[in-house]
Length: 339
Image (cartoon, rainbow, N blue to C red; front, side, top):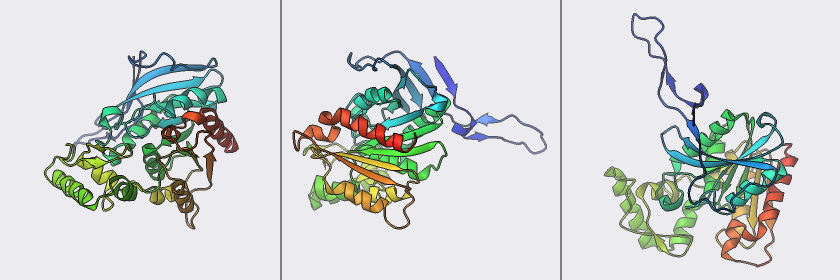
């Protein structure tokens, strides 16, 4: 069932007046739509809501026509108009079915918070192919869908790569119903980290940069570059010119959290698992320093470091061993914000 256009605030509408005419009807230039769908194939049987929650799947169409797959999990008690919803976005190549987004979609409703978890345009096989500046459309589409569903208190959550996507959106959208931002597994400065930690080879980085610029100038920015990029797995991966230029290249990327976090005009919670081997322990403190610097717009910032009984391990980045503590930390902080 297609739920249709989300209203004039969600679209660009033009009223075209022909010289000498009066009252020509408005035309819709673009819109955001959402449609309820059956449970998608491939969703694991264990991905179910708690006993006091409901789960529904939907497909959202962003303003630029991109498809955004999503899941809505709501507490059985409480109406949208008096409740808080968390719009949740995943990390590199992830989805709402991967930690921590999947377990937060199941655990937060048990603590009284609805969750609208989305797959952005860099989900799955599309990893390292997207344009950072365009992902805001996916978050925007989810926010407008939450509004259309009746929610008037919206919290943004971004994990790993989505932490910078959420920061960018929050810094550029000063909306009264956006109330708070939650960042998990957050890096500090991705262009710097990409060059000096992930790639660690000036010759390779220069070759990537040159290839990306050439692709952009040839109108082929969406194509995979001939040179591969060092990544968080330690392997070399395929990357498009538009991804490299908007996320990884210091000269052109804006994926720097130390820049955007001080421009977010909402309370911010940052949470890191101490077992995380992807995000270094220094990175949250770089963000914390930027967010609390003189002139920062952030009204409050809290950083929580969750101990991991297993010590440093790959699953630490996605809070595998801290599912309950992460959900409790977020819920407790939201309650502190009176949300």
